[in-house]
Length: 162
Image (cartoon, rainbow, N blue to C red; front, side, top):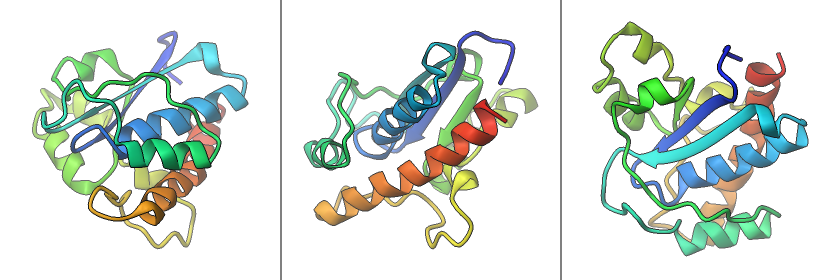
């Protein structure tokens, strides 16, 4: 972790109503389980402003609830350049999100904070990105929550406890 207290992590997807708020919620649960809740702060946002101010997608909230996670009141917002200053680690959910964020980086230090969620996927994971479940059914939302839960265990162990 950095010298900042708390360590600040930002999850990013396209609209900030499915993958990134789910990542934030699942990450917060993993952080709490690791006994690090006071030492880490998480947020999420999107690279597009389509859903600014909205709650997460109801299908994602239902998938999170089925998996035992609870919604904490998040409202969608758009990524901004100040996020490079405000966060220690910025985690896009897919390669397109990563490219969009890196295009806004002001310098190499900003770019160095950006690491894809796939970096914490388990060996042998079939996904290359966190898939966007928006246009699919409940099974896609459940699969995203399960993928994030597996990845968050590694992220917490490697980045926060390691």
